[in-house]
Image (cartoon, rainbow, N blue to C red; front, side, top):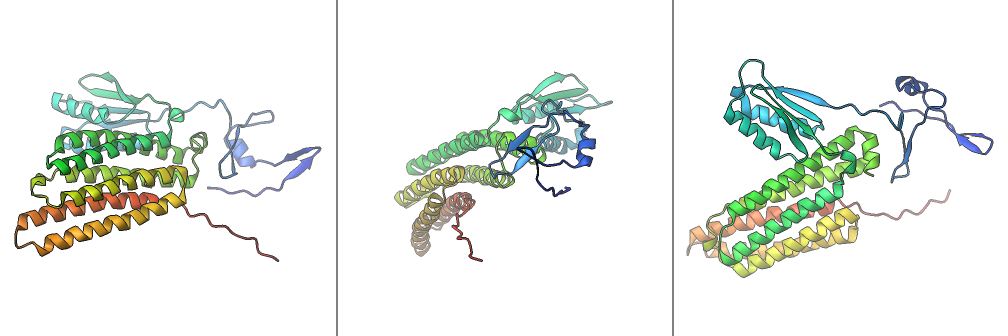
Length: 335
């Protein structure tokens, strides 16, 4: 990235600054050209070549190979996350089998905004139909958060009733993954396109923080699915303590995401304090269960597994809260 330094000049009542001649030449600008200027939240400015510049459609062609379908599906996901508008799967010789075609379509259905426009035996063409400028990173994050909160609430109810919700929770996690992929695509697109980032009102640090937070939320969803896969809730003792700990985790999630979105440092510190309270409950459960291990080893293992799973979820919310930057009041130094 080139950096230029310019001195402000005053002509009449106007303050002017010259633009780099190389930049002018590369963007085919001349006297009279209109260049949009955005004022960013951090008080910096972004200057763009022209208001009406046509945006190029990013297109990728992925060759079909029946022997490497896992790789092909991963390439589709990768192209989506990299912001490609058109993703084509093509073959020149071997027709795409019905089973492989179905798998490709199932993968595409997991990606919000990506729709199949053309299809035959030798190619499948899909296109991203949403305008990135109309998307909102905060709303997508809140949607993920709402889905995960619902999943966790159902899990605590399952622990209370000693039932299993594995299938239901796994289905909800698929929707979490859809929103996660959409958010990562938007963030990466903004990272590569400063004009888009400006329209979305995202600074560089915002982009990084949203990427990390999205990862924590997606991980929390996966941990809840892991917890749901435990088929021995009937062996769990200390149900009241686990429900108490679950209520704390639920409040931690609510406060952590709100603190991140609103950049509220005091709320983020509350999450850290709540984790200490949660940890005390978990330690008391572990101490009692290991002391009584000789009575029912199988129950002890189930208790420790549940405690470990809940702790991983709670740590996700501490990590989100930690992203809220502290505000330091700096007094000017006297010369």
